Image (cartoon, rainbow, N blue to C red; front, side, top):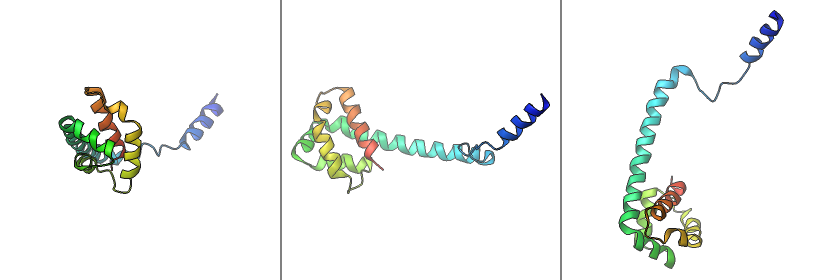
Length: 118
């Protein structure tokens, strides 16, 4: 029994706990995570407010291949300029999903923008 316990302790000592990081750094990582989350939530709220206020204009811009309302949404979501053409093509393919004047459709558009944002 002692041999099994000794082997188990030695084997578990070699397990990688790298995903947890250094326990002494956890308080700092928690603060950093809180700051990142609040920054992300503030940016997401700006994108959401813009989409809620300008859904029709954004959808029109998507349909015609671009425009000021869509550019503003891209800027607020921090979509990199090199990624915008591909995202625009994707939004054009999925435009039916964003067309209904519903909270769900607006939320899906916000998600599409934020996922592609930086």
